[in-house]
Length: 265
Image 1 (cartoon, rainbow, N blue to C red):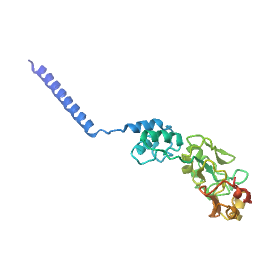
Image 2: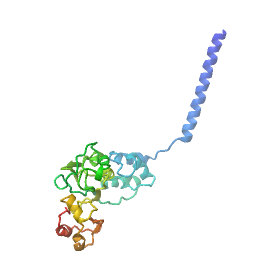
Image 3: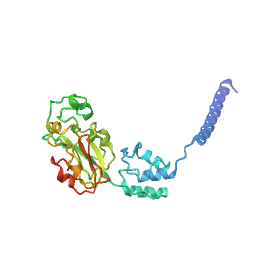
Image 4: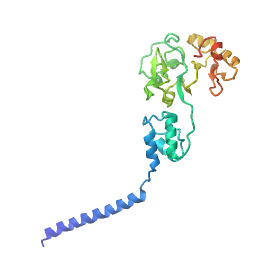
């Protein structure tokens, strides 16, 4: 047999043996280090709506499914799916789902283009976060109000929030209370409240009454009449602005009736 043929056969043998050794090592490593996936995780993932909004506090639906199986998140952890999805997941996990209260986002500002004026003409990117870095926190006369460039609208994965007459407005029927808009607002004007809540203080200014009226026609003057007359002690004035405790509120409407500037809507 010629040396040339012997060389080819030797090389072929070496390659074959090397391939077998690598295959055996990969098989051993795959078996040794394989990640066992709980079947419940896949089943829960199928039940989740798939929006991957992050409203649950985890990186998407896959992250929440893994957390539920690991016992790090409740079966009712998906704010989008609500009670119906929680009940299905509870069935998979063999537990009972706690019935939660549906929530919705509200924008605590009524400073429309008519109510709140402008101090100057803003020139720059249409971003609330960037505009806030300009003098007085933006062009509006109220530094605490809605800047109106729609960072919250861009963040909402459900098309539930839009800019209307210079301020953000939430469609409560479309809102899933994921919290994306809450995180996106640089002035912290957006709050999650119970879906059935009937009264909202639509102002977040911390200025005193006189300064509020100079900046906006629709601002809370911090007079405290709402708090003094609330039979449930469910509303208090903090930092010159009224705030409702919805755990105590019984929706009687006294605060709205007593408010002299009608900022409780």
